[in-house]
Length: 255
Length: 302
Image (cartoon, rainbow over all chains, first blue to last red; front, side, top):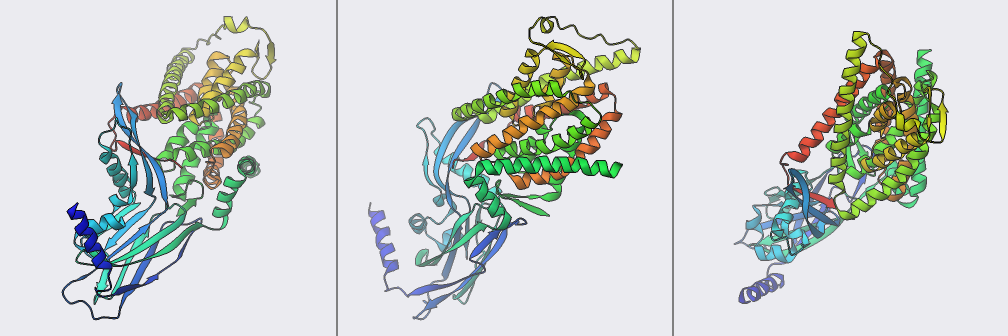
């Protein structure tokens, strides 16, 4: 209890104008990411500067933490067990909300730029980003399930912890680049920037990046959702036409 | 070169996709199977979500079967009457299968059941075909004529029909049942069902191998077409872009396959198909038996 109060006090102190006022001026290489037919992932460059009215606080080093998070979607995580000699999905855990993409870039090792308390408060690190894991009572090690989500998504580039990847110059300019993989979920990607000193957040800023399909990809996707029967017929007609044309062409070539 | 698939929401290598399409097309033309039993697992390996792989596979089979059936029509190796009877059963079976699929989905074990269905059916049919064709091959080498199997129970059934192209005079009930059971399995396993229907036509109905391939392709066109529209309206997982890429490779492959098929002897053709079916069965069984690298599976709920 006392620890929590102290943390709260500390957090309040950090937000008061007593501390040096430092704000973020942000630039993004792009605000909109278009998914076209040849989309193969995308790099976004996030750069900016720290605006301040007062001189740079001398004793502490400026830390920068940048997160990019994709739309949150509910998940079901299954665990396999060997039953009658074969591997079967036996236990399921529902994860109410997990980001479809999540990257954390920091200017130094994560624990040194952001304290545990601040991490909990702002939900910055990857494990913090996964919310409300609901498991049936029979499942004891819920932790293993959320760890599995992180492990699997880490492996396919959906979750990234990029320590030491934010370059900070003169405690004022910072920049980093984040790789968005090809299997992006459409939606709004929130980009957050935290300036920290001594592990506590002194300034926070966020900006949205829109990720959307364009052109034929968008048209097809919308059709499949709004006119599914028409879309099905289109698929069928295209297949029939393609098959017929192909055989007609080969016959022509042979004769 | 990468291609982004709008429904699957993944980016895949175009050359790889075309290659998969071509291989499946060759099989389709050669054996009269849709190739779904091969294309669906191959798409899984490429990282395409299972639901999309199954639904789109059906769509691609429509095209490769049309292309294949044209070649067979020209050679007059399609029994249209038999095809229509099989089809009537097939549509009923397919609707029944989709209902069953959704029921199993609610029970949460559909993935395992699909895999088990693959292993069991591929194993039985592959084994059956393999030994049967080996025996037939030995018989033809020794010069003895193969005896046509006497289907006592088949001949006793009512509603007899004459199937000229197949040279059969049998009851319509067995083909209807074959069509229906293939339809059920097709819907559950997300395949055209040719790999089940071809042996069923040979061993159960006693059709000559020559017309079996064309007739099964004919029936598959309609069943997979039906499945495509059904998937588009219910699961909404048919990816036209993915299908077109597979079709492009597939139609070329089907022509190659039809030519190759007409040059090989029927018994050799059957041994080849049997080995292929057994190989896929073996691989799927291994996946179920061996300890997986990752014990957890993520399923997007929305």
